[in-house]
Length: 213
Image (tube, rainbow, N blue to C red; front, side, top):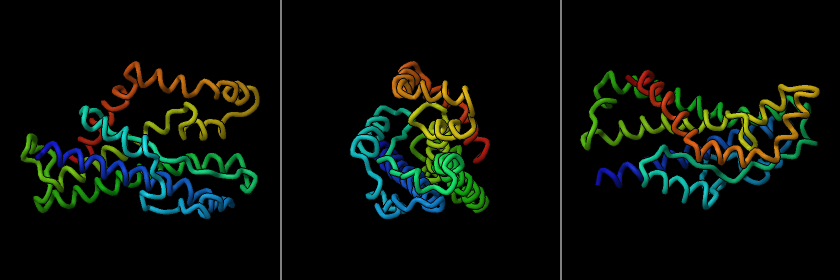
């Protein structure tokens, strides 16, 4: 029963984390002058507006069943750069807004956890099958939101970090980076295959313990 509850909580948190991530992209694009995503209903925390059958449902559930760090992806937010008031700056802001929303959610949840801890409502160190559902929910809200943010900030296309980096680079450096975009998905798969996700996860686990401990 504990295992089932853990999977349900992780899956629910992934849905929430992905929803605020994509809604933030859509909201920022709208603020920058492109209402495409808003007209498509993507400025919403309703997971149904963002679900990708594989990335939002199947992949996170497989990871949860394997006991691996749980994350996923949603349908990409469609933007029309021609509507942006300042295309270079707006591309960066739209790319950064998704991870930024996840970091804000993680820090807010960590603050709530600390308040609840003062009243002995939650604990980080119960362990085993005795950990409270509320503690699990808050811990995974911090953990998965941070994991999703850090992963997406990796500057490999099509991740958000690549959109930020493209806005920073200029001249030949930018052209060289753009020429590598077509290999981005291959590089990303290699990163995952050779254990890159575990390398990312370890410092995040330590950060979560520091925030909640």
